[in-house]
Amino acid sequence: MRARVSVALRRGTLWPLLRARRASALVSGALQPIETKLCEVEQGGIAFQLRLAASLRQKQAAQASRKPEFDPFLPYDPELFVADVTDAYVCLLNKFPVLPYHALLTTRAFEDQDAPLDARDFEALWACLAERDALGFYNSAREAGGSERHRHLQLVPPLVAGAAVAPVDAALEEARFDGPVGCAPLPFLHAVARVSRLAELSVAPASHALAALAREMARAFGCDRPGRPYNLLLSRDWMLFVPRAREKWEGVSVNALGFAGTLLVRDREALERVRAAGPLAVLRHVGVSSQRL
Image 1 (tube, rainbow, N blue to C red):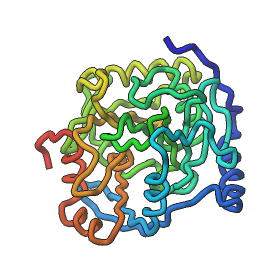
Image 2: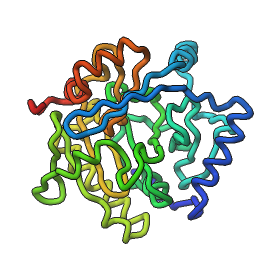
Image 3: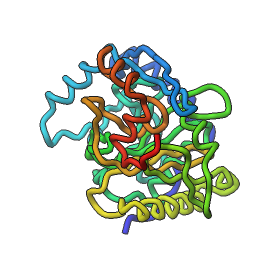
Image 4: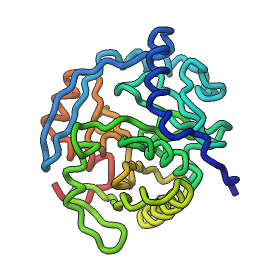
């Protein structure tokens, strides 16, 4: 049983700390952003963002040279440290961000990324989301786009301007519900829940409610058993759960951000393949098809 923890993050400080740390880490060279060119492709009412990475090989080369037992979070680079979030979690900058202010929430001690999420994980994530609109996400395993074994959740600013936080909001607005969990017009198995009411609660009870929702979704797809990969996305308005079948489509790796509506490709050829097939076909391939397209 994981011990109960308390929030250490002082309200109103996360994003000023993120901005300050990003500025200093860029100067020191600890932060190495991956430059991308943005291309939008609309399908199924979703304005997908295809990001062509100009320097993705830099990250891949760094990862390929590591020893198998290497853990980038033990110890973490102090130049990337942003804040203590809870007794169990710290916030760090992603060393190789595609998006500005891409943050990681990592456990202080090693815990396996494959282990089930519980209220303690959601406490750290919800404490950060309570600061401002943002998108949190979790890649449960390598087959779900996870690249590190050490337990971590991720946080990015809104991917779109306006009331939505991500392109997939357009589809989630059409979700139908039979109880607290429903589904949207998407061609892969998933579950969605509205969570905006939890803003009325303090972080601790909200995190328990989120953990209960995540467990219900995981059980529905058999992802509560070890080795069953999935992605989970969380905003202040909704939670989206997607079981996974495989990591890649024709060499294009997909993590949780793909299901938010953002896909990263390494070259122009891959971008054109995704554009021709359609992003929803890519997501249906790496998820579990529901035969709708």
